[in-house]
Length: 450
Image (cartoon, rainbow, N blue to C red):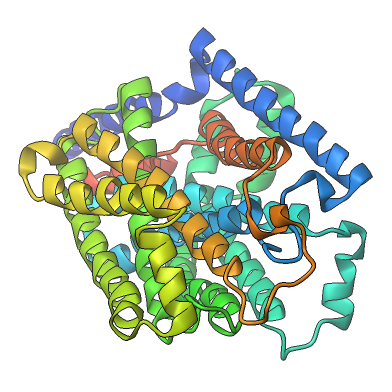
């Protein structure tokens, strides 16, 4: 009996070592393509940094934002990044708390996408400020009557919880890296030693860890819902045609779940194809994410119908002017492309199983993400161009808005920053949880930590 137990234990150890070798492969193999990719991202970020320096020197005049369209591409990007960040709570909290096991390999992907999106969201807000040197005044003199202060509170709270929810499940994996990454540079080994917090894998430690993760999962759900609800209130509490709506809270949340799910699908595809993770991110995962994407897209479609049908039916003067501007005016081409290519057509295609396979659903998700970005632009800009007060003695150019090269470059740099954070994380930490994967294959905590 003892010999049989030893043989079984040896098999489990070999299986564990195989899992560790597989899931740390991205950290050990840095090919030429990865270096080119990082170089490309750094070029975009540097170009954005140069343009931002130019903006600091010359002011917001380098943008096309003026007294009428005072929000533009930057705020559109902010709402987009906040939307993407909501996927962390959807996959790592809501699905996990619901007992859905297939989401295990995707939780860390969702969390790093969420954290990277939040970092860029906070950065783009600072970029949008004409006087970033006065940022501290928001914390010192900010009033709770201001929705902007609410937004700052919930965004930073959500970032802290997301970082903890990303870090805590990493601790057992970091302890494994501490043992198995002796060939890495000393600074990296020291980082693993510090971040592992002396983890030994005892039952008490696992019990405390699971309790902490569960508490964070429960806490992050209302915070996640509030972050996009409060963001929507920045618009809904402002007296402008197109924004005077009571459905903006759930409407923004539904849209965030849709774009966040699509973003995770894209990252899943490239991780699987680049690092040959077909055994861990399977066609089943893409099929289930496709079903989830159909569900969130249908919910978002419902709110889109509500958003436009009610004001279009009544056609009050300024609301009607805004609706006609979207349906048949200057923004009509963008509007219909977003609705058809970014939502309706993807829903129709994803209903059929062949389109929920890896490559087709990745391509569909790219269209959804691009459409979602331009959807945020349509929420922000056309509304600002329709004011309640008469516009007098303004140059004709002030009554239109077209993003300048500076705005486009800075925004592209912020998107590249999201990709850079995800890419560097993959090189430093296992993107698929090792210890949770081992548990699902029947490997005990004792075997993992021996």
